[in-house]
Length: 290
Image (cartoon, rainbow, N blue to C red):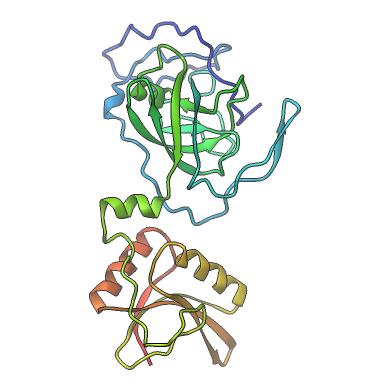
């Protein structure tokens, strides 16, 4: 079934015969799909393949219930706090270039994985419990539907964890919050400091009392209150600064503006605006209050 992984076979041949020439176009994919899964003829140096970089997902997640081999699966809606230990397998040449459950093409040299119930896409950290090697992969496929294995890694991911030759390994899989992951490495990633509020003023989704000279970010403006609220909720889950709706009337009708702030400085606002643009979160513009 296209996009659903059933696990790699335990007998893996040719893994010790590395080739020094460049891989053929498609990075090891043959002209016809192999009938048996396995490793590619070309063994790339996987140490040069970077881990997946957790990225804030702004579109819909693929997390609808589905049925495979007579079993019903109900994906979780949030994989950021997922943690489980169990057996991992990998898949390779038989599925290289085929569509994943997420609609992307599987690349056996990509840092990706298949999971039965994590929302697609989700980023996870996988640790080989036998050697403590750790990688980060992007879950974009469904599976494995074989035995009790909990995750099916790409060939490259299995090589980096050191179990491709063996076929399986006991691992720990931990969901990643992309915002928290970036903040651990760069404290300036999104704003962590809460803006001060006047004493007694409640924090809410409605517009806070503004003062002349306050600096805000306007991230979007919508005729639809529902669309504005969706963006507000998304932004609020990713920044500690207050995110609110400011409603105004114009000749065309009511406009619902999504704003963040007040910021502590104009530089802080510009910094956050740049991060939001790179994350494709609206079209932020720095504005003054009042």
